[in-house]
Image (cartoon, rainbow, N blue to C red; front, side, top):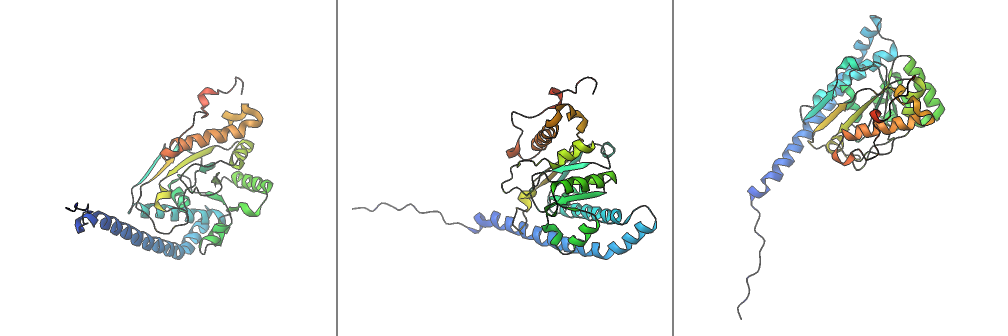
Length: 288
């Protein structure tokens, strides 16, 4: 009886493994270079912060909190420059003059580095509304306190609105991640209403920002970065006056409009659904 030849898997050669080796070496270079640069940038910021702070205070153009916020903005600009050395980094926006210096920036939240990406914003007097854990990070915590960032976990909703209104009255820009936490699957989550109630009550425009790719660059709970492209789209401001005729539902309608707008410019998995709100379909009544 003749034996049937066995099907044997072809042996993998070094050339077959070469693409995986190259990909790993690329990731290794990206991690080594990025984290080295990140540490050096942070150390440089710590060193130059005191003299820069003193200069800004002495020339009389910045109060204490404003000077710290300017330094943090420079730090964000440095981070954007650094990351663009290792991954494709794309940013699109209209003319910087079209964006108010005091507004509410609303962005989707995918990664720890989303906040750093907002160094692309044309305004610098920025105040973040975040949860408590970033305040516990060494180096960041003291700067966040001095910059008058809001710890939303340690205040009631009424306190948040009052303190946010106070900062907007001082011509600061509030930055809010309305999902409340980072997405674990890249999908755009439900938006909480705080930012939109704040916009409607103060008449402050909202600047939507769409962030894509940071979840692939640094997924939630990970430290190993991947050389994945990052795209930041700073969208035109949304005027709360355009939603006033919706009455008690104005903030919800504005929330849905902004969410769908961000989804349209984000990853393919977060596309606009069939119930998107388009302002052209809901014109402002005459006389408003």
